Image (tube, rainbow, N blue to C red; front, side, top):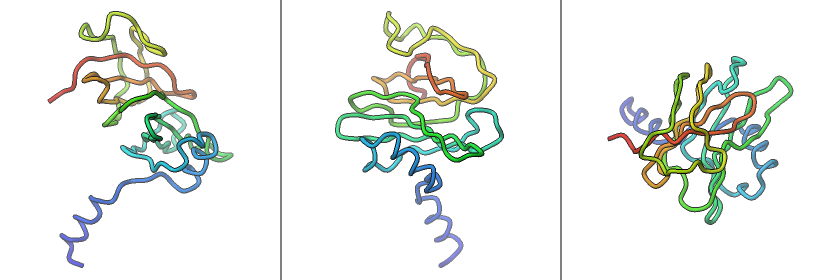
Length: 153
């Protein structure tokens, strides 16, 4: 295989967490066990120097943003957010910073939504919620997001 063909093949292969991390997620969230993770990214979400894995799982009309934390004793599975409908179509690493709710978001806060947060750790930006993006604060326990407005071009 040529170098160019190898590069094209490598770029088309979806990144997946280690098998033990996937097993932990499937044990904790059996309703998503048949789903392969999509939009997978690696990020040190809790600041312990280990690579944690985040991805979107889908089951029928439900979706979940799941995270597998790398711990010395093994993998710990958690969810960042769950819902019904199409859910997120893109995940990106969110740099540590302060984030505030955008004026174009709905007038009332949704479940687990906050008006703002400041984080010294990276988070996750999820796109595809009726044209809005959600900024998720991560850490030892993933929870809470801020609606940060429309999609960027």
